Image 1 (cartoon, helix red, strand yellow):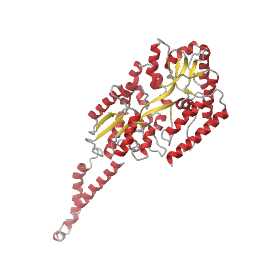
Image 2 (cartoon, one colour):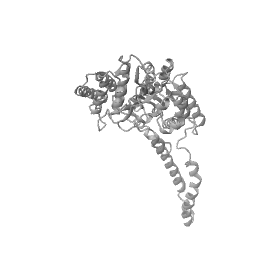
Image 3 (tube, one colour):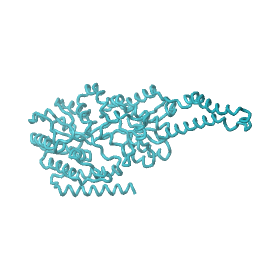
Length: 475
């Protein structure tokens, strides 16, 4: 790290000064040694170095002081949570606490920049004007783009630093899927997770029991059995699963079936794996049997009105589902489930709220990391979740959410899924374009007459299109 190199240089300067002092300096008259007894010069080099290090080393190189003086260093933090939003108030409170308590004298200033698109535009402009924050909330894909022009700090440097980094225990507490997110193909860590949400199945336990099911489904086949029973009970084309053919929903099923968007070497997109085909056929089969249907908008009313046994949503939609059930006076027990594979595999497609550190100078970069560690510590992450309803990124936060779960009992079903998240390849080139292509493919695959050969052909074309997108951005 830059500040370690500076420390080494300062150390060398101190040693050089000691050596010059021991040798009497460069201005000693040439005739002086001749006037002294021969024995005396032999004693001076032994006595002087022994005395000078004892006096100079503690003052020049304090063993326990920070390697860099960060007192008064100011860093700016951009985010997308506006005034009046509980998330804005929580960020401000955490920043105030840090400014009042950090031992380094660092000062953090936080600024709301509007929507994600607004913030992204301002950073893009700042890459030319130089008006940039030190830390910013951003999509991982955006941070990767900015890193290609050396505007984003590789966080591995800080994470692995023995003085300011993370302990192995802290690293082990981060959910594996979350920890894998934010890493560029070359190994650089461009994003750090502050929280996440997951794409999940919303399930009505009470209605399922009335239909004869004592427990929630645990495999893809059991999901089909239950939603088809609900569809048969309603008999009007509703009752089963509300399916919207999006990248989020299709990838969630595919992940549970064992799919991966990248080839075995991790060097290219590959959607030809059998798991992608099987996932598509499973969804198409639901539609063919009248067990899946679409809605024009968010399916919260259908869920609350027993028009669907299962709907698909982000865990961030919890308050909207709660409101929908309250609006119609429905007291059914409901909650969130992961997506299931053929043998009970569990997965969710998760979305990370990430922070990156932009390049500036060694002092501000280190100060930014120290604040980021504080902001995402278990204690402060628990405060953030109480305000946002998002999911934690580390198991050590979970015990601190007892009061929040008590106030929002349905959140427990979200929390139970926190460790099942699978990351989309946001740091692989052209993912934003490829994801739009997955959206398009999901719509075509949602066909009651879909065959395995037809699915394979659609996915082969998706793989070819993805390769072209990568070619466009890398050449």
